[in-house]
Length: 401
Image (cartoon, rainbow, N blue to C red; front, side):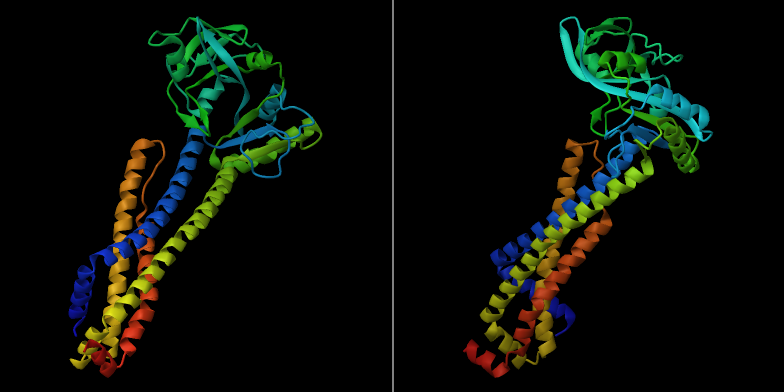
């Protein structure tokens, strides 16, 4: 038999047993679908993290009070012997030549009220430099004023969603809102930014850092954003800022985290989780391969007479083996193709539901998934194929009669 004849005969056999073929393909398709969806989810998570860091700013070193020995999120608070203060930020800016800007950040939550409307939101105390470092813009009015950060003017910049909730279509610039029990003059509205590290940038209010500290009766900062002059200067910023803060605190009771270090840590975690989940999902492919083996063993038992006839007509053992292997590989290949098509369709639907997450099926993962499925098909199809090839022709013909 020519290879084309082997392929045609295998295809015809699968077509004659549609139910058995369909169930075997479905098992393979589910395994391929699970592996591909999990790897796609892992890739999307890594791309999403990169986008989030890009939104956070560039060349940033985050200083937070308290010493943490693990990577942690920027701004994680440990046990601090001394708070991180505005004076610390001034000292770092003055004494560190590699530093371009230092932005103090104080964060709390409070109700923001206008008329009979009220929302509990994050209140972020910061300075005028926050807009440039974070890449923020206002759609109306202006950002927080520059000048002495200790003055603490009672002015506020609203996130776009907070503006809509409190003022509807009316411009809030010039109106007064109450944050907690303190009145603030609204001077601007932020351009929509979306979520960054879980915090909705559209549903918050920005006030001068000194005002936030008075509002929450806390002199400690949540963190300080220290910006290097360029990417190459980040290690120098870390060294210089550490030296200045140790000199002021007499101890390393703070944590400095670079974006690259945090990004690398998060990527390694996502990679490990993706690999573990993909390995677990791959078990379903192995189970599907065992299913193919069982189906093929049954097929061999049902077709003993056919095997005898083929051998009587001159088919060699390797050709019989190739016939059954071709059936197993066709089952696995068709199932893999169905699983890949299903994964692409589901990923496209997920991309429409969650457009902020970059869902994309990577062609390399799809190829590896297909190769894995074909490998399992060939591996588990080998035993039935070998059994069929070893059947004596006389015994097979006897079974046919």
